[in-house]
Image 1 (cartoon, rainbow over the protein chains, first blue to last red):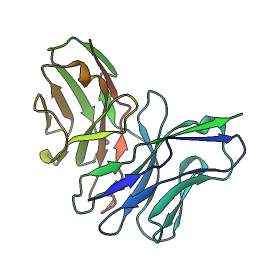
Image 2: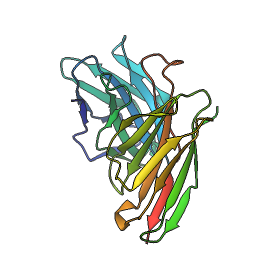
Image 3: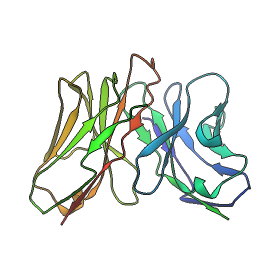
Image 4: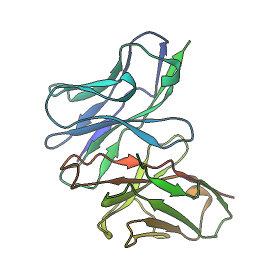
Length: 114
Length: 116
């Protein structure tokens, strides 16, 4: 079965500092991995995805994610955090065996302090 | 660019009442999904449709039903509402054909259902 885990409920970082939001995955085949961001009372917005190719994937709003097959991780990163990045971040994996299903992690609340 | 449109954005119903949520997918997207997100929870998959046929079923209660119409819009019907049904309901859409096997899912802004 496919699954993703986000080990941190909350990440606190000061504005201007680099941020990392962690995600590990468990899949039976090649992983199709995604990151979404959710602002309060809003829908999930697509940030980036890894399908194949370069392990470092660049996405919206200056975010990037690094796919690490040996560690089964897909951590979200940004070199310099902004207060406006404060939101809930979800990692997700697509079940290629059951094409229609996405599995979401439990979410990580990112707090960026001025 | 056009996004997934959901209506209504907010809905208040009493217990045992019925509610209907509507979703208009991104044009030319052939797959629609419904998710339920309770307070502080991650989104839970309810049901999906591909080309107007139900393609997968998740944790959708028997009191709920959904369908996708000829114009690809979808409706989620919820009956005998319970307090625990209070949640944010997301519709999402994707395209198998245009985006190949990757099929990024794009979400609507959600419909807030409050059952009192």
